[in-house]
Length: 289
Image (tube, rainbow, N blue to C red):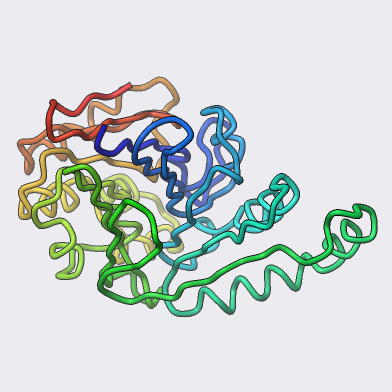
């Protein structure tokens, strides 16, 4: 198997009973030797991982596209749960744009009472959660696994910096764009890739909502049409849409979203509920479950 994409959370800052916060799992390989890369850590991410039979101890690394709250809401839960559910010291690697280290330091500071309680109560917990933070801006990211990972800057201004990630394994390549408008950095990452996972909002719908704060979101997110044009420029085979604003009704097929993208992109278009999974293998046609 090349790479598997699982949409752990397809939601947005607006709480939804059926959609967890923004989070995508990129998996390379199978079984005990698989590498699992968590891209963003929105609300409910560990519950969605549990539905896959996985947990924080199974994560090879966490990669953060940007520091908007909805993409890091449950990072504290990932850090704590990894610590208390791992019985040999295994540092959690967290990769993100410049500023990530300060955010993680503040998360650990906020957890100080809990950390103290657990160290006092459990003889085998003698140190705070071991965390390794890697700040990136562009280029290869050396994490020591079998998967090659790289990043490039994206454009989510005034949220700055923000980055997208590319994963290459077994001849397959997947890009996770995060929140961004079309930009040169994302085009570069996508060039020659098999699939791109892209957050999208329905600008045609939001533009008619009489709330300025909603209108403010229009200039730093991509629409399905813009994401499709990005995918088409790069020649990728599969466009995966996520982070639906407004939410697609649970169980709905998102046909209108798909149609908007299909007008600009001739490849496969994937979208769905949380836990929607797409296998990207250069030896076969991409499959979805």
